[in-house]
Image 1: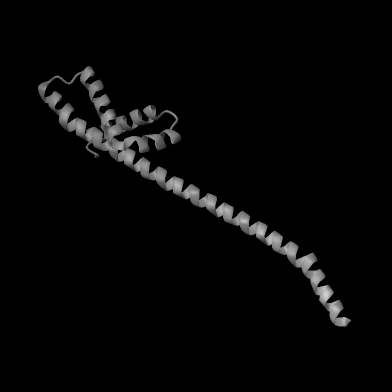
Image 2 (image 1 turned 120 degrees about the vertical axis):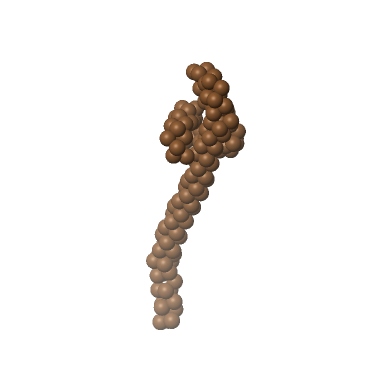
Length: 136
């Protein structure tokens, strides 16, 4: 009878204490795993976004230098670089930058910058000024 009583007490203890504790532990493990998955997804998204930002910066810089060397310098030597030529060179640089970036980068950047045109215009102006200073 004492074996039966001990067996029942162990069975009751498992049912009352250990099974609920296992449920609680499982719940916390699932929450921890979900938070780690979310963190990893965020890191992957940030890495991807940083890749596209770097790609965009390089594309803009390349486009500005290219337009300056092929278009602006030629027009300045000919003495025909005026306001219209300046505006045209800006648009040529912008179109080249967008072509170099590609649609995936443009889409990713539109998620971050609500008005990609304003960001792109400002970056082109920045790199034009840097190019004039000789910084790039």
